[in-house]
Length: 158
Image 1 (cartoon, one colour):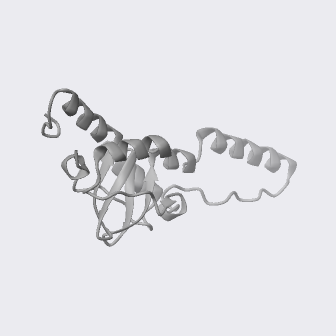
Image 2: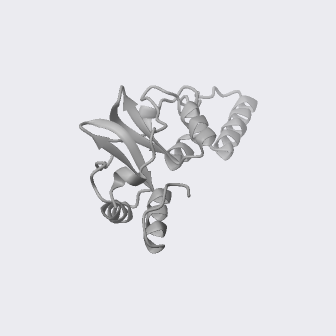
Image 3: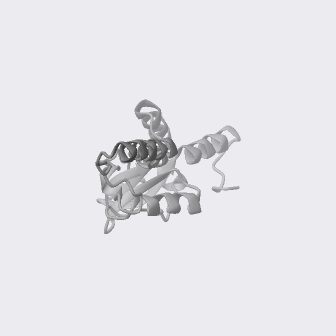
């Protein structure tokens, strides 16, 4: 089974200078866990829901900073401003994986599944002649193997 038959296209993507808030909104809106990051049509990285969870300030971190600031204020001390962690100001290129593993539309789903398992990744951007043309996710691989188990290739989503 070729990746070309099972990859998702067109691909929802982010740009390096998009905010991580924007990336999270795109992922939520389209119900995806990974966004390739492109400059033009050239793949430069990938950002995942885990990258965003790690990058977004925690509610607990914010509460700790506020409590520390209040205590310092009561003591009359000056509070050092925390680094800017506003998700609308942090850009995708700061938290993405640069130069992600990629495959070609002519590669097999079996090879993609093996690579995804070995590398412990949930998706593979699909590149043809240096241009992002699709993405193959864990869910797409499962769909391909279910079709194979049922005796043949089925249309995606059937």
